[in-house]
Image (cartoon, rainbow, N blue to C red):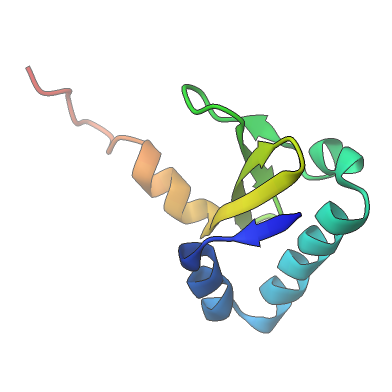
Length: 97
């Protein structure tokens, strides 16, 4: 069973048509053959978050999913650039003391 969070639905609606098609390909892949999902979408386990993975949907599109026994929840759909901005520190900045 596949679920989308409210946030992932909103993000999906904001995508360009090309990205929507790529996302739907992911959705159908999960639905039809979830075992190939991990290699096909280069799944990476997110540290410190149980059963949660980052999937590469395209060069610029990522999906964050939570996987439990018979359920996959698409938590978020996000652009790769956005992830880079969120998780990389600006050059030259130092950590607070």
